[in-house]
Image (cartoon, rainbow, N blue to C red; front, side, top):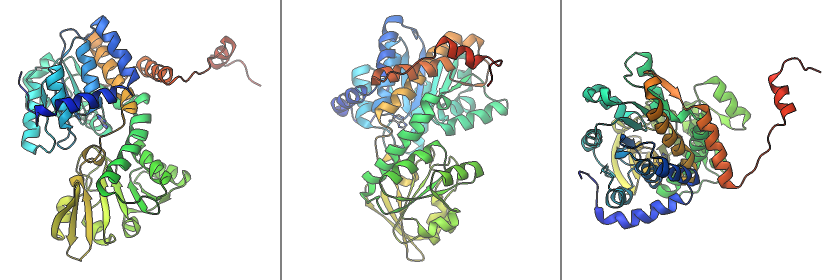
Length: 418
Ligand code: ADE
């Protein structure tokens, strides 16, 4: 079996950590048990471009239990957990092409290696696999039934491909399922981003001015957690509706040009490029900490920063101190790559349980229905979303009420008024 990982000797540590994650993933466990019996993915070749974490390992094992043949590469050069990669190779015989800290060239070489499986289904987190198929591996398109996309940034890329008429096979936007974005993007990003910032800096959050660029689901999750730890949270936004929500949620909203003069810690979660640039760094306080939790490392303009920098040094793991020509020091975390996965371990397993349940059930849906699907970006079918919510509540031991038939009738009728 071909693979490319850091060190197979790390497999035992990875196996135990994967088991630990699995203990908080009851929905994936139920799906895996069903897949084992029903074999809905028998003979299906799957290429996955995901963050290689303990939670991803649980998903890949589930797909394999369902009969699939799986290959995986990283969806970010810094997010791979090398012990997990080793365990997947050694224990599960899954070809892994991912090494934490790989350079751009190996990152793309690894994508090509995963594609050599000649996938019938693709799983993406950021759409790098799909865009490689559409640009450099077009010969594979004929064999692909469909694909899934995990994250907001990837869904945006894929919707523009569909709009431009270049999307060559159907995609299910896992990100847009309620059981995904309301939990993973909000509570997952909220906790894991704080975790990554604390692990890399060990700075006190209480009493700090914490500037959050972007008040989407990820930004609001982080804002909740930063506030909960005693930070004075400032939101910057370009969307008036989101800005208004931030105001009414009780946050201070400022233009970034003003926020930079008061902030101690900055984090971008916008999905856009050059959100924090040269003009902003020059106005920041000495010692400001700047991180990104958006998918790509484009939100912080590091090129611009270098132009106004005298010298740099790595002052601790994942913290690079830039001394500017004006004498101030700016600390960039994890090279501007997504801080929660680079310096932390990504979202906790309990939330990935639902995200990856959406992945597993969407793959099954594609395999069953691909002949009926068009070259479009689809939502996760509602019945899957509801089923996952129900399974998660059951696993948590939470019971809810149901409508009486009279109530159901009332909700579907228009005749009854006052
Ligand atoms: N994205 C964010 N957190 C993650 C995790 N723990 N595993 C896989 N992908 C993730």
